[in-house]
Amino acid sequence: MKTKKNFINTEDLSRDQLKELLDHAIRLKERPYNEALKNKSLYMVFFNPSLRTRSSFETAMSQCGGSAVNLSVGQDTWQLEHRPGAVMDGSASEHVKDAARVLSRYGDAIAVRCFPYMKNWEEDARDTVVRGFAEHATVPVINMESSMYHPCQALADMMTVNELYREPRGRRFVLTWCYHPKPLPMAVPNSAALMASTFGMDVTVVCPEGFELCDQVTDGIKANCEREGTELRVVHDLEEGVVDGDVIYAKSWGSLKYYGDWDGEKVVREGLKDWKITGELMEKTNDGKFMHCLPVRRNVVVDDEVIDGENSVVYRQAENRLHAQKALLMNILGEG
Ligand code: CP
Image (tube, rainbow, N blue to C red; front, side, top):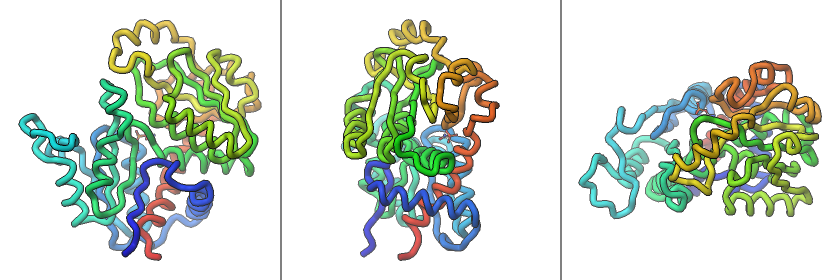
């Protein structure tokens, strides 16, 4: 029997396996159409909105001869319960266990997007929804962004870095926190930093005090850096942190210190509005490329002159979602 290949976190694959996917993605960018996924169906379950993920997965399936079905939870489906053993006397009419088993009988893979509930860190960190689907589905499950990880975004990000620098090893990847009016999930920064460290980049995480990444992910980045002979720096000063950066990856995320106490965090956050990527800041970098997963709040997170400037690669990143996910789908669903 073929092994079920889930894709929940980039760390589940070796660097060589990830490299193989990225190399395939670059070849697919040159030759986008094939029949490798003919008669294959992907069921996409969205608990949260999406522009890029939904569109790129759907296009990836159709350009390879397959099809995708989009299900917005609570609109196209019943509300779904994810807690094991829950007494379902609330608003949810169906359990993830049953949804996963049923969709497995129709499709060849299930992809799930479920952001954190942002109330209790320990619960969110368990990624119960996507892991619940993975546990109960009999077909592969792909993470389209969970509480902890956005591995498909990280594939596209690293593909973009590989296109920019033939050898990313030794380049400086600066992940920088930016102001945003709301606390956001940590999945993108977690996966971006893990992936950069996997590929031998020096990683700098720039954030205000109290906004550090969680221990689990920091330990993962450190382990990758140790293996690759590189370094992880955590810097609490934006101007200092971007110096010599080859990649400036901007993203906002919520503070673990205030997790669930967002009114408390707001007081701190409102004092951090100058954490924004400006043209002046980019001049301190090593001709750094500006990256962001999108969507982005212009002139809050990043000034127009940077995101519209010649060193911005945000649309290339977005495009590469299509190619990278195609390579992933062919790996997971293709014959052989
Ligand atoms: N970057 C990303 O995942 O975009 P969407 O939220 O629009 O899918």
